[in-house]
Image 1 (cartoon, one colour):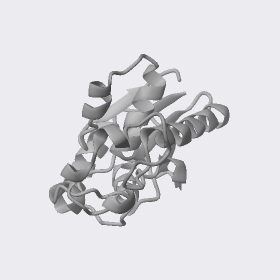
Image 2 (tube, helix red, strand yellow):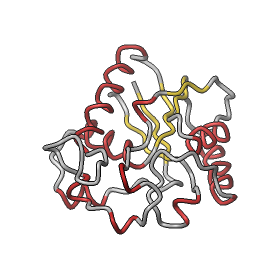
Image 3 (cartoon, one colour):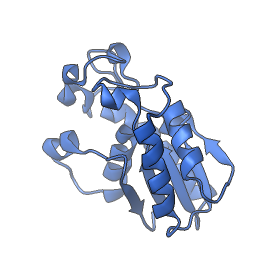
Image 4 (cartoon, one colour):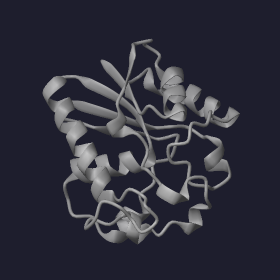
Length: 179
């Protein structure tokens, strides 16, 4: 199984440097243009299935990039991190060490931790391996889930600095082969 990971393209929370979390915002015009550019790049990449986070900005990105016009499945397990009390708050308020904890499921601000993200992402990946063993799966998700996939698939120990600094840009296509 191969996984092609796309992060949702630009939404207002990105522009305003706030925690978007699971809020259902639409893409900005720049986000629409980014998705159109990704669609052109994806024409060189084959995919059999497309699965999106149910959050609107991811669904909208999926609809634009889906050059094959396949049905788009949605899966809650690849939805954005639950930011708890920090939804739509300044991103500088995020305590990355607390959010990226591997010891607890909830951070002090009631946000979902990296441990929780890893658990649900691993469940999703194991399910995909069973259902779509020899397929190319196009995922449209969020930076936090992209980080979890990177950690789970790469399987080498990551330093806290690497984990805290991981960032999947909206313009990037990440491909993981033979999972």
